[in-house]
Amino acid sequence: NAGVTQTPKFRILKIGQSMTLQCAQDMNHNYMYWYRQDPGMGLKLIYYSVGAGITDKGEVPNGYNVSRSTTEDFPLRLELAAPSQTSVYFCASSYEAGGGGELFFGEGSRLTVL
Amino acid sequence: AQSVTQLGSHVSVSEGALVLLRCNYSSSVPPYLFWYVQYPNQGLQLLLKYTSAATLVKGINGFEAEFKKSETSFHLTKPSAHMSDAAEYFCAVSDSGYSTLTFGKGTMLLVSP
Image (cartoon, rainbow over all chains, first blue to last red; front, top):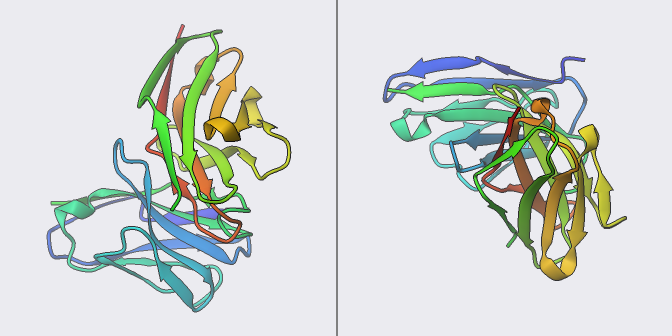
């Protein structure tokens, strides 16, 4: 199994550009998450989804959007990129809700906004 | 609201020495507690989790953690460090089986020969 796959692994954006980070999982997990990781700050939840068609905001949703049209895919959209969005982004999935189940993480997408 | 505090952003040990990484949590209800490990340029992977069964939880790679309600702690230990243990370790808490995880800021473990 591939697990959780994120693309691209690296990207440089100019201020004001937009892009989509792709996330796909092949484990038939209902729950999917997007986190950002900044040095010394741990992981902050951006958005999450409890199933196809259902999404909800996490701790730091501003400047991002998500959709969940299928169980497998959970893309993260950045509109009007800003330097504050320079970060490493991780997608994760789980069989059960976050408190009960193990999160499976992708390898991350490193984004730089200049 | 739930929160996690990891004491020490960096911990240095010698190979063969005891590893102790500290985690204190805040939760209004009995928590679910987790330790995750992140190796360089990789995503996080689960080391162990506490879900109200035994208070001493054994995980992968010889790590274990003890849930102490009176101290609101869930410290991670390993009797003898190995060079391959060098990584960043994250404690996480959820206040129910249906809520999302809240992660601590992480502790980088450095192991010297």
